Length: 109
Image (tube, rainbow, N blue to C red; front, side, top):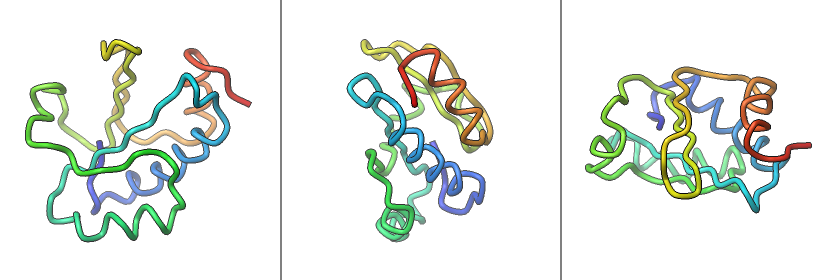
């Protein structure tokens, strides 16, 4: 979950794109949801500027029903294939940190 006015969030979108490119996408799906409706007009430019290949969209109003403990951005939730939460990551992580984290669940180069 991210907001358009959060510099670490925008940087991390690009980092997650590298993770997506370097990990087994048959077992990994990345979805980034923008929390601020005011940033919606910026979303296509954010996606194209960073050449993001994974799903990016606007968070629905019901997002807090699924993630009631969300409070700061960026926040990432790792879910299993049934949608059960495995892990919550609050704050920015660099590429190396992401590869270490994701490699626990899927094969990465």
